[in-house]
Length: 128
Image (tube, rainbow, N blue to C red):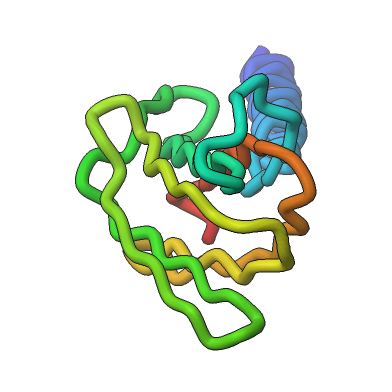
């Protein structure tokens, strides 16, 4: 009887462990870049950087408020803005390639701005 209970408990622990590993492996930082339907303003494109803090499968997610986002142009230009309560920092930039640095999270990516873009960063807080 005790062996049956112990065996059943071991199987339950094993199943829970496998399920946890499967959930954890899908929890990672992702960056998605999509087109943004925004008009040119004085020859400049709109770049929106949206930062979502992802706290894991059971922790939920929420926009990053007051996060520092810096954009560096290849010609040495520099832009800085803060995310609003919806997690979005907006920039109006001439066409070109830019390095975007989400300073609050020490996360960097490069984007080619040949049209208006939305870059959505879902940051895996507990892993990154």
